[in-house]
View: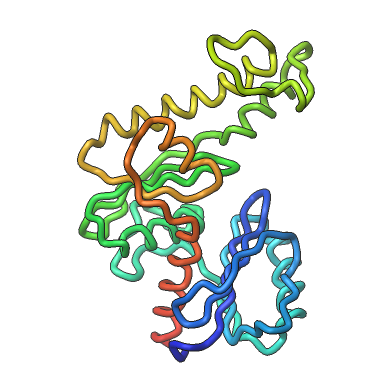
Length: 243
């Protein structure tokens, strides 16, 4: 693949699909949606596909995107034991979510030494990578919206409207504040504990809520909103060179 070729990275998460367009190493645009973005000015030569969805859902998405870009070469990415100088901690490497794996690869190649990756979206995920490229393992907890939804789904009387969610000082004095601020405090406590237990590691943040959580705790970070796509590009490029 030439350095100037167009690449589309598809990161199919549990609740949304992120499309990242590259021209060489430059990110042209990022979009979210449930179908291939319509950009007549951009025609990818390569598509790197990473999905944590079911086989059936992934197959449907694959067909939709391939129909939109029929001339693109397709490469499905998966978690493996070792690639791009990074070693997977899992004994069954394929069971590590590919989004986590690609974020780990991307974070290692930032060359920051020992790092913790915080990806806070549907779930809050923290993964640890040392400066030698060894993935040490990590954690998964429910994300803010998931915690809130689980609480509402499993209780009869905890109910509120979106308009009741307001910012205010002091202890929560409404059900809306009690829930939303309560789950936020739980997430902050988890991140703060990780930070305290691993003082020699630097934070790399990606995902919707990660930056806000670290900012709330005044923790320094390297913010990389496209970390998974950057890891995907590096992994896909290496796999194609091997062919």
